[in-house]
Image (cartoon, rainbow, N blue to C red; front, side, top):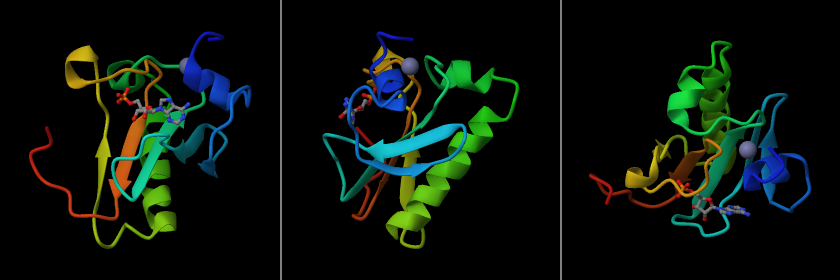
Length: 114
Ligand code: AMP
Ligand code: ZN
């Protein structure tokens, strides 16, 4: 989708600090980090949100979760604990409608989140 911000990052049309990449996923640092580690993991293929990704019948959601964990290991937060968040829909705070997992870690994370 040419008007999608994250599709433009996949296409390298706008810059991002990419930290991990697989054939079907991309991970890059959030430009407004909420924790010492705050990385976004996306499927390269456009899906609107986690609900739509869940309906992709080809293991793509699996790939996104595996990349999220690989990022946590690479960032050194896997042992101490990290959080994977999909804001899904405007009521949950989703602002970019290309599904993305937030991988957050490197500080104490309170529960429940706001
Ligand atoms: P959400 O509110 O769950 O849709 O999350 C969108 C996230 O994308 C926010 O945390 C933004 O800081 C982040 N973001 C928006 N534009 C960019 C960008 N160009 N590069 C990196 N992160 C971005
Ligand atoms: Zn997109």
